[in-house]
Structures are given as C-alpha cells and as structure tokens.
Image (cartoon, rainbow, N blue to C red; front, side, top):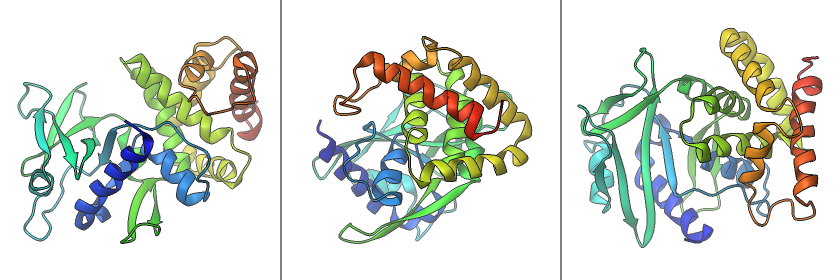
Amino acid sequence: MNNKNLEIGFFKTLKILEAYLPSIVIGGGWVPFLYSRYLLADSNTQPLFTRDIDLLVKDTLPVIDENTVDQLLTQAGLASIFKTRANPPLIHYQGQIEGCDVEIEFLTDQRGSDSEVVVEVQEGLHAEALRFLSVLVENTITIVLGDLDSPLSVKVPSPAAFILNKGLVFPRRRDKVKKAKDLYYAFDLLSRDDPLRAEIIDGLSSLKQKYPAWFKTFLKNMRSAFNALDSEGVLLVLSQRPSNAYEKLNDDQLKQYVWATFDRFLKGAMGLR
C-alpha cells in the first residue's frame, strides 16, 4: 500500500472520530509524521509510515452525542476484530474507509502490576493498558490540521514526552521490529538541526522533575542501547532506514551518524557527562 493511501485512511479515521478528538491523543508512528508535516511544515522528509493507528485515551471515555466510538467505527464499515480470548478481549478495528485500509487500536495507561490488561473504557470499546502510557497522555500539544477540506485539531504527545516514552518502552518489546521502530523514531527526531530538537531538550528537563525514577530508567536504557558504534541500538535504527532517507550516506556513514546523534544527545545536549 502506498503512503498516500495510508495518509488518506488516517485522516478519514480522524474525521469519523471528530467529536471525540478532544479526548484522544494520537500515538505511535503517526506522531513523527504530524510533527514533520504540521510543526515543521516539512512535506519532503518522510518518516516511517504505518498502517496501524494508535489512539490513546484515559481509562474512562464519556459518550458524546449518544454515539459510542464503537458505533461510529462500525457504522463507517470497520469490523471489530477480537485479538485475544481474555475477558474483556483486546479488540482492533479493521477494514476500509472509502477504499483506504486502516487498522485502529485504542490504548490506555496500565496502573496495576499485570503485564497484559485490557480495559473497557467505554461501552464496547476495549483499550490495551500499557506501562508508561501516562507520559504521553499527560503531556500533550495541539496541532491544527488546516490543510484538510475541514480543518481538525488533534492532540499529540509533546516531542519530549514522545522521546521519553520510546526510551522507556523499547527494552520491553517482544517484537524486534517494533523495538527497532521505537529507536528509529527517536533518532529521526533527535537528528534534526531545527527548533524541534531544542524543544525536546527543554521538555526533557521538565519531565526529569516530573518523573524522576522513570527518567533514570530512560537514561539507563538509552546509554545501554547506544554505548558503542556497533551497539544494538545503532543496528536496530539502521534496520528501519526508509529507502528514501539519508540518501547521501552509505550504511557505514549512517551508522556513524546514528551513534554520534545519540552520543551527543546523552553526553552533550542533555548535560549528562
């Protein structure tokens, strides 16, 4: 599926859920796309695209205008697919919206000790509860999608919160590809020589005070993953290189660039010598 088709499916999904957007935080791989397109007005740099649409919500989502989220999505033609046999089961919404394939997953914060929890946040709407998701839901910015036929305002994690979350969750990933994507997203943001990187540094300084224990874990994880040129983190980032990204660099040069980016971030920009 081409990237344009994925974009159309993503925007159509947001339009269907427009009434709920004030209560939803967009997560996952669509966050770097929104940063590039709308924060930086950069339509040339293409982040990693993904078919999955992760939508983050609190553990209770009030019904708006008598239509539940489940009703809106199923009325739009999507099927609710049971992903587990647990009670309540994990449910994804899959299908086509006006010819565009989409898969939607709802996520919420995990507050208990169970490793796999599903919460019914609204009638018929089951969200997977994940550790550290509160970092994303509690620290957001609003982006206006003004280039659509009907402009939309959406919430996304602040860039600093996005980086902090990725640094916390990647060691917990069972799927190596998802682990690699987490690190590539962080690299793609940190490698930019633009105001976004400065915003990340300033934001992380504040988040360090807000989540001191988690911040220590974040630093430990990142230092371990990027402690040498041939470290696992560097190789995982390289494995996710899009075909049209960093075209002037061969693999060895990109490896050096990845390691230097994280080394500078950890030792220099963050003042963590």
